[in-house]
Image (cartoon, rainbow, N blue to C red; front, side, top):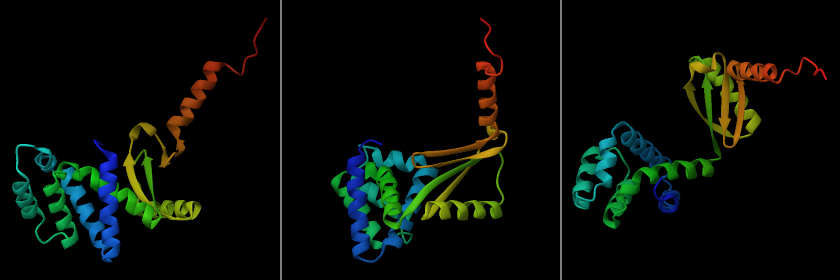
Length: 186
């Protein structure tokens, strides 16, 4: 992130305006759409950061991409960014918006990494257990890492719960290397 303070301030302003106009959910949907567009098509991000292309051209291109898909607040916000020369920070602003939205709504981001893809029923059970223990709603992101061999790793904020077979094997290897089962002869 190039300028997190700048992105955070713009995101906060957008959230405040959306709350004031009672359109927070619509603007949040717009930010998610923008994030998916910027992730799936890196050329859009390059276009926004290009100093060669004028702001009015960028507005027209974004208008063609987003026409009828975003709210008036988000559209006006993007125009404001272009006029101020801050359109290159849009990727960071969408990420900062998502973080601030989650804080406002009391949503915790949780990443679940497993050795194999999990069934939807099991994911729902895990979501319910984590929400019950956290006492708040969670946003569950899943990933697959075959190196875990079995089990799972659950990450949230600064906490990590590692219940993988890989960690168990590493612990056993460490115990054997320390040789705690053979007393020292001297």
